[in-house]
Length: 295
Image (cartoon, rainbow, N blue to C red):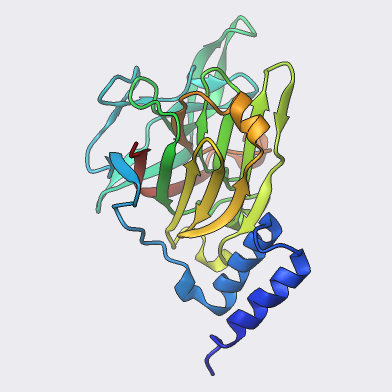
């Protein structure tokens, strides 16, 4: 029996429950209804052209487009450094090209010694994780930023697609997927905003949106996007608006400068003793697209 007749009824009930058709609780619950009762409203294939925007980057990963330094034609491997000063269990490396035009963002045991400036010593990092950063390659204020990717099927996985600085904060987290002990928590897309100063950093607080079923982890592509304007920061999942931030005071003060694009895999809340030498996770990226508003 078709369920399409339920959709208007469920949407109306949501509006009454949340009290406002524009609230973020409403948007999240609406996506859940679409996912459960009317999947035709959700699509992981999004058009190349977008009204009101010019495409400035269509990274399809059909070639090596990164290097260690980063330049006007290449992504930079890693970030400001080749490791995060608060996460000394991983260091940054490149993704791998896969057949079909995909980049595999991996996490694997591959120990390497690096000098850590805050410790003033050389230590061994057990795991290498893929990370690309658009330093010198692309920096943009406002626009549409979109990725089509799978999710990693592994414990403690931590995929992310985000914008940041300079300087940091601000940061716009389009998706962080925290797999947890089983890895299945990655089906919740966590949306977040960081702003303020390094000494007095503030954040929106992660807004989780359930995007899939655990059985599809690692098999299904999803499209995550953010539309950043002077008035709003809107987040889309598979073509559906799932969160809106429109506090103009914060936007005007903290989200008013160009930002870089970052995508990476990593490990969250786990170390070598727990994961061991056989640990491996990956997610595939089909493309990254960046659009500039048409003035």
